[in-house]
Length: 229
Image 1 (cartoon, rainbow, N blue to C red):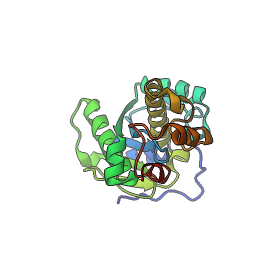
Image 2: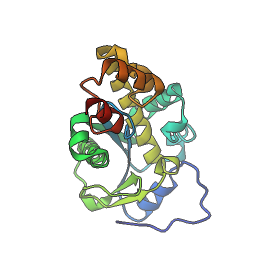
Image 3: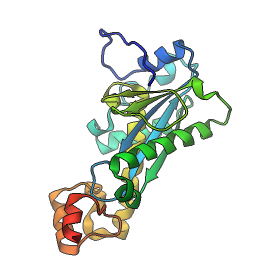
């Protein structure tokens, strides 16, 4: 795992300070990586990768610094607005990847999350449209683990609350998963997926008890396993 020293006095604001450290160290691209959907009882886990491409000025990100933060701390409307800015920003290249409920049941949710992250990184690099050496790309992973990629990486605990590119990835992952679960709500309306996105709310648990699990429920998760046992 690659580590750079970061000042203890560095303020914990979500800006581009960490990415700039890596650019000064000789990296050409910094990719933040995060996931959404580890906890729900249904649906896929979705990961996103957000690549920051220099050169850029403070003015380039003026509309995003302050608007991009940990997606869990944002309203749905704020996430959607930030998502549109991220997706259309000339200095950000982003992609998302999902790993479905069947794979989650087969390999467990942690491994499924890592696999989704790996796929999101690979898709983002492919979207760049130009060749760049793997050792010139730094990947900043939200969490305390590493993933199976060719590029150097750093894991950052609570990175979505500290690192701009990770926070951007967290927004992309959350919005993309929420939209997917809204589509699932139209297929399985009795479960209320559009409201709770598959999390184990009181309403969701009551629907499972009444109707039984639907095809996208995660059979390996205890509330579902108890019903289908």
